[in-house]
Image (cartoon, rainbow, N blue to C red; front, side, top):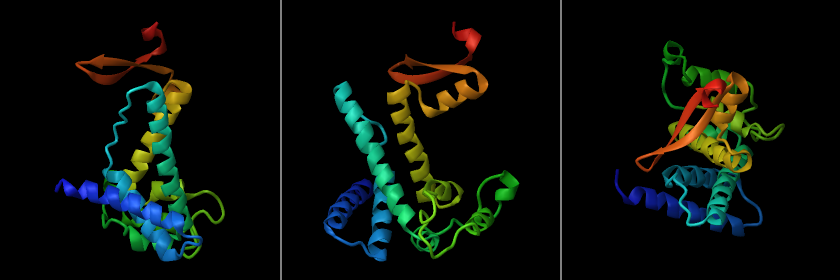
Length: 194
């Protein structure tokens, strides 16, 4: 991949946010452009949060999360039809074989939506919509957004989302260890950690 590609999308994202922030009323094309710039820009950013102090780390985690929330909010303002135009459904047809999302499962999930009403018109359904949608950019965005939520959960509860889920549902506790400068999460049953 060309090294200027990530820098370009980061720059486009920053410029688009600044430009759209100045507008009093956003048009439908503005929302589509904003969603595209935010998703592409966030997808190419370095996911590792580096900070010199705990306060800087906390600020960086919250700033990152707020960017993802902003992007999700903009996506929620789009109609499903606009999402399809901006982020075409990936043409994968063998989801039934591998029990994964595919073109047919996306079409089935789209049937629950009015294609010409904003996704968040009735409820905040943008995250649910993205969960069922199959486009490489939006899948990466959704996974990264879950990572941002996990960082927030770690700040608030001391555990990432996956560790908390395993402990609450399966009784499996986790701990963070460092091996050769790399943080590793290990999982053990309750009685094995004591």
